[in-house]
Length: 452
Image (cartoon, rainbow, N blue to C red; front, top):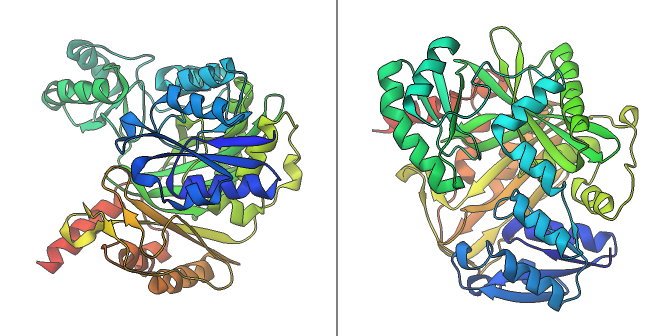
C-alpha cells in the first residue's frame, strides 16, 4: 500500500491521514466545496474536490470518489465511519476498480449489515440473541402476530440499517399498529427498505460492544466498551473497559464476539454490539458494525494498539500481529463527544465560525478533532466537533482527568456540549456506574425540569 484515499471528512479523516503517515503511506483527501480549507485537506499529500456541500452530492458519490482514486493513482480506500463505510456496493466497487478496501469484504458487509441475517449468523456461531422474529416483517398484521409470540414490550427496528433510524418501543397491540407504518416509512427513507424486525425490549439493559480485529483467517478481541449513555439512541459517553460487568460475563461476551467474526471470516476492525440485562446478567447480540467506530480511541488507550494502523496493515495483506494472550487491558479510558449543539436549547445544532479555541492537554489526555481557530462549522454534516478521551490507572482517576479536561475545553463562536460532559462525569450515578440505556435521557429530563 503506497497511496491511500480517505473517503471521509472531519475528525476521522484527520485520524486516518495521521495513521497512514505514521506507516509511511501517502494520503489523498476528498472534499466538498464547503471543506476546501478543512484540516484533513491540508494534512493530506493531495486533495480532490468531489462536489458541492450536501453529502448526497459529494461524500456519498461513489463514482466521484473512485474517479479521484484513479486520478491520484491511489491503491487503497479507507471509508472511515458514516457516509459509504457500510455500503456493500461501495466496497464491491472499490474492489472491482482494483483497489484495496480498508474494511471487510462486500459480502461480509452485506451479511452483517442486515440485522436479520446477522442474527442468523449469530445463531450459527452459538451467540445468544434477543428473542425476536427470525426475519423481517413487511406489514403490520404479521408484526402483530409475531409480537404475540415474543411478548410485549416490543422494539421495532429497521431490518436493513442502524443508527437509531426506524426504532420504536411499543407496549401493546394498539401501540404496535400505530407505530409500525411510521417506523417502516422512516426505514424505507433511510435505507431503501421498509422491512422491520421485532425483538423483545429489555427494560433495563446496558449497551456493551466488543472490538474485534480479523485478517480473514484469525480473529482477536480488544476487550469491550460501555456505550449505554445515549441521547436519542446516539452515544454520548463511552468507556473501556465496561464498569460493573462481571468477569465471567466479560469473558463469555468477548469469546462470543470472536466466534461471530470467525463465522464470517472477518477481516479488518469490527464491533459486535450486545445488550446486557442488568437484572439477570444475560447478554444478547444485537448487531455488528463493519467499520471503525467513533469510540475506538478508548480501546486504543487501554490496549496500546493503533486500530486504524492495524486496519491498514490488514488491508495490505499482512496477518494479525497479535495473539489473544498478548493483548492486555490496562486502566480505564473514557471518551466524551463534543458536538456543536446547545444543551440548553434542546441540543439544537449550532453551525458557525470558531472565534477562539482552547483544547485540553496534559498527561493521558487525547483530543481527536478537526477544529481550529477561524474555522467554520458547516450546517451540512454531523455536529461532532471533537472527542475528548482520557486514560487513568483506574476509573476514578479517569473520571477526575475527564472532568479536568472537559473544563479546559473552550470554544467561542458556537455553543458546545463540553460543559455538559463535565457535569455528567460529576454525577454520583456515573461514579457508581449505576446506569442503563435509558438513564441519560431520564437524567436530562430531570435536569431540564429542575431548571424551569
